[in-house]
Figure 1 (cartoon, rainbow, N blue to C red):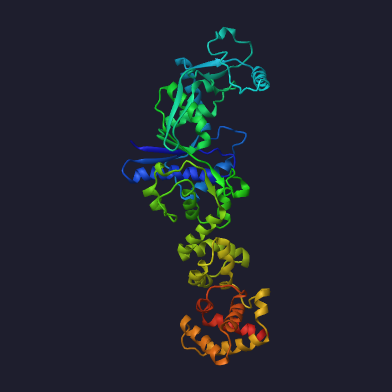
Figure 2 (cartoon, rainbow, N blue to C red):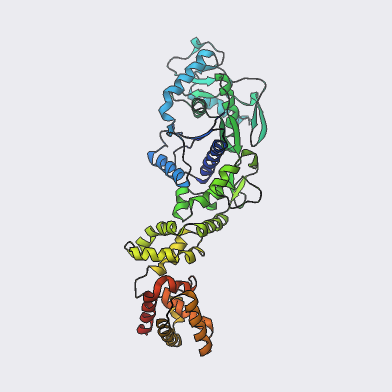
Length: 473
């Protein structure tokens, strides 16, 4: 059997973090089975039947977010709204087979029934008053809704691949509406018809849909169709255990990209929210495809922690290809400089990336630290750097510049050896030489090893910046 999963977001906003994890689990499950010879497909269905809230911008945001995360789908994305006629035909089939009926209750009548239930402290359920009633009794001028003839007795059982066996008494479920009086199909009806027509074998989604699964299984049974396997994964909570909200970092995927997170870091973090593989924390996409299975999904809510995500992102930045990082920071550097860095500056950035990325946890942090390599002379020193360049430091820097200019080799070892020797001969602590040197070369008090900076800048630029600082004095 070929495994077929689907991600079915509603385009009413951005691709939020919970939706991204659901997409990831569906994608991994399909790709895992495809790799291991069973065959696997991952489909995308945009549930855009709510025309008042669905927007093209939101659809594009979903596409963009999934593509950025690397969660490519098979075939064309399907619009649920485009299938309305198919949904209506399915309802007609149920009516013809006696598994559905027309309900002529007016909105006012239903509102009165709800109010009566509330007044009696009861949970309202539709009482099936039109289930077996003669249609000739229908009031004039009232367009009917169509309801499912749900089984009144027994129970509905779901053998969930995450939650285990879950059951509900059928008496707890009323005859749900399949098509509204205006002829629009409901979410429940559309989902079932689409899952069947798309050949979905596994429905992997948040456990807030578990109650929907009971109704959907009843509908699959009414059609006489095979029910997909269900897997309801626990929702994501904040680090404090409360329901995830914006204050916990529940932003759109696009916001995490803008904040400087790498897509592979975010998918790795989302993978570990509710799924585990021993003690492994850093898991590549290739490893995730090989290892992923629903048996390792936990039953308890996962906790989203921005600090842990940030730390993980730093790990991925350190492992990232230097050229790719240069390309990632170029747009921000261009804005800061007011121009795109020249090719020689790009090459300098790539030479210096090894030391820069060791300290950065996000792309904006990398941009900030990389500025030292693209500054035009004369570079501006921040307040902390200025305090290090007093009159005594100026005197030492003149000696350092002259000594560096006389060196035969411009290497980290040669430069460091000269500074150490100079410090010893003058009875000066190493920091009293290195810190002012860092200040005038970078404009800051924090940078990679100053000897690495000297080599990356090169002899001419380094001596030039030193000379500017001494001449300014």
